[in-house]
Length: 75
Image (cartoon, rainbow, N blue to C red; front, side, top):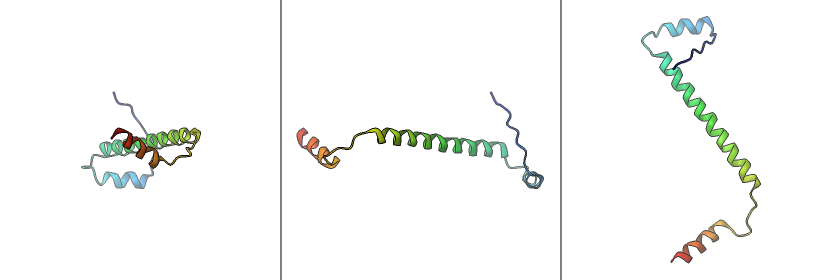
């Protein structure tokens, strides 16, 4: 189901849009909105990850060393 989104735009822009009647402005604007929403969602997720990372304790042992030890243990 679709909803209507109505926004006022300057008359000059409206007139210029009407010059390109063959262009599917609805489809284009929906795609722009989807991309922007995805950007916001990614930013929110990254902020959540940052908050979690801030609460984690730092390790005294470098991660590369832990990874090497784990790999060596499997050999």
